[in-house]
Length: 134
Image (cartoon, rainbow, N blue to C red; front, side, top):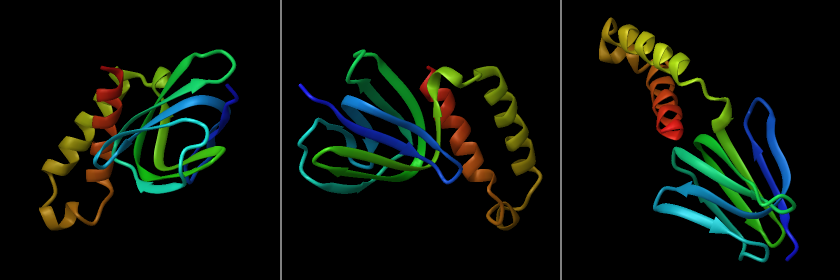
């Protein structure tokens, strides 16, 4: 069976551009899986892990995602994520240190002041990464 293109893109860079056989992404109402020929779709992503099965090697690669959208056409899946990272590149100890520092900083701020920062989103990103690595 022929594959289709899968791109995972963030505001910073294109993380993935490969031919895939199967792609699974975290949707707000549950996981969504796509094969070649899927009906066109645009949907909001939830924080979680995307799985991309390579068309040539059948290897499943995992990517932690935070926010964004998925667009599906007959022959392409584009994941536009706020943040994305290969799960294999996540250093759990480093993420735990970042999370502890964020929590300390949040504890020192009034809720109104904390709302003016990216600390809550940064904390959520740490949580996604830690969940992704298990």
